[in-house]
Length: 239
Image (tube, rainbow, N blue to C red):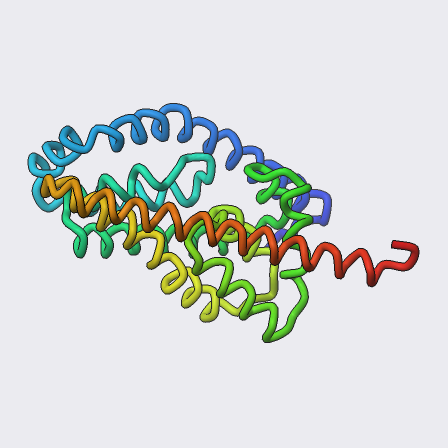
């Protein structure tokens, strides 16, 4: 006879799963994430490692990017630059994008299953409240998410986790996570590739453009959040 779980047992299992995820994420960030980022910040050693591991190197690199997206406290930019340095602009972009998209899909699925408690493992409640307007179902909401996810300089790890709290269809999220990551990845891998080719002028130009676009993107993100926050206060009685 098949035994069904009570609501209390389901809640206990869900809580246990979240706790395990927190502990695993902390362990990965400490024992894997820190050495990984130190390694990525030494591009010559990273390239030597890639050349010494043959066909396994691209898979390992994509797995590193996947891990970075899922464990949101690990910074992504050093890995993107290292990918361009070690693999070149085109292959580095493809591998980085593959790992990032798979990580984004995994995060989306995890948040859909475990909810806001999982998101708050990595992000404080006040940051989530600023994105509360993205919970409203509308074509305009989807367009705004496209915009702020695509522009470099916006907090993609936060947006990635928050997207799982919305009712966004899987297909739409997959498109956003794929197309939306391209601009920031390309600017980093192109700069890293230029460094690897010792074309320092091109590298400086690429990183300068990336920095400028990221700055504009961050301002756009803040303006969008501030505007919807103000609108939310106006719609609240007594606000």
